[in-house]
Length: 323
Figure 1 (tube, rainbow, N blue to C red):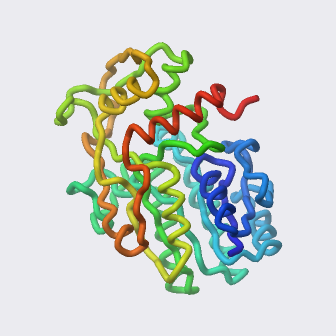
Figure 2 (figure 1 turned 90 degrees about the vertical axis):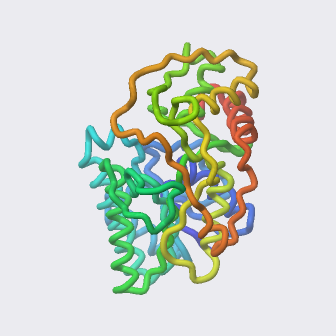
Figure 3 (figure 1 turned 45 degrees about the horizontal axis):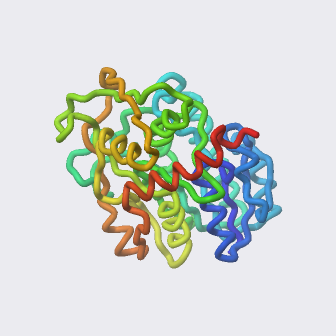
């Protein structure tokens, strides 16, 4: 298939592009390189430098490539930043997303695999989280993703789009080529590994008084390769609608640090800080629907494997993609 990948220079988009190309698909990456990395572009892909906030740029790219499907990763994705600058998120994630959808409708491209998030659920009513629980975002990031899901649902009714919403939990891990390099870095595993690399003195843990076995937050971690595999599976058939992507098993912050100590051989000193506002004690996915309908079967569910792959990449790229 001919696939247009927006945000293909980013963490998840780069791995999805790599796997699409490995399977023989023709890939065009559309990215403004604002938060992605030129070094994360797979050299086998066509690359178009462009910004979704510019309607003409994405329309021209769509007209030139005439893709069979779109994988949409391009978005801002920092919860804290979204609270400080909500309009950045509505302009980039919602307005930019709407421009993409308009271009798809104009060029009669029907299939879109949308990189959504468990942040659309907000504080969940039950655990593990299924796709039918209420969506009540607690921050502009989650709200912006839900707004684009809503836009896509209406365009599904009006113009026959076939949107798939893949709601991620905590993406982590790496391939040999591509890994995680954000600025600022807010994710736990790369911040833990930064201590092992000597780039930070200690791991900051926000809250150790939650109602969990060791008092720290529990989250569902999913390997980046398994995330990308779900996107490839969603390309086939007539799948539409939401699918949660997670392992269904949660690990606490301290469990992650313990495994990272085993993998890196580093003591990884910890500094406990006050809770962050709005952090739930547990966020764990039910991915039963993705497994039954998409045929998705995560290959790297083991936390030690996830951290080992991330550690291998960070050792090979101690400064990320910077040369």
